[in-house]
Length: 337
Image (cartoon, rainbow, N blue to C red; front, top):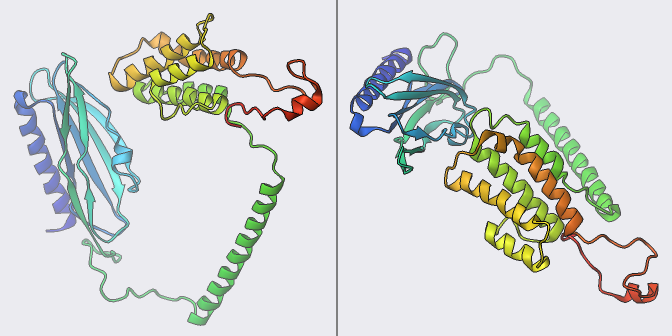
């Protein structure tokens, strides 16, 4: 059987399997994954078809195919189709992948979450897939062949040219590495500060990523919350990336017991909303979601104004102390800097 015939047969079997899965409404939701071929030549592309069958009131989470097929350079297209049963829907993804390693290549099972009309979460997983990569293909060959004897390459350079060129290249690389390391040592000795992250600009960048327009609410709110947490960690010295929202609020109240302006409540609301979207699958109101980056920028400004103590100017006295007494006080660090 030729490779072309094998791919054709695989797609026929995949179609029959998908129709069988869709015909039984009681089995919904269901997910399947199929390869168009199980044997390819080194460097060839194969196609993985991922199909989600689900009924009315069942909302699937968008699969992260890039992570699933990491390292295989997937080129992804997607379509939505009516199923074989009334009320059934089909969401299909075709990913062309390139296989660059010999032997069996395994694709792990991919779990997909579905949210039912009752608010429950159902998880379905694909079966693992295996494709075998065989050798290289000669010009005019229809089938891949194993690499056993060396493949002759016409022309080429004499071996001593290759060895000499390799040594020269290695010497050049070592010289460049030495220069780079020397510059790094000089930079480390002379640098006085590291430019801080512009968290306000990061909020603007997140707003312009188009995540809301594509329905990727969880990713959108995760990025917003992480940006605010990183700012709190850098500016206030709170280990905000590792703490829960309530633990962050508790530490903020320790620094600022009174909160007449409602700043800490604003931080709590911002992070709690993100938690609900990420973990409780809450679908936010679109106008409020669009305003979230600007709300984050406003929180940054208020945190700087209300919770970050300004550093004294050079030569100023503090708390009525003389300059000598002020110099003798312990150094105050803000935001871990």
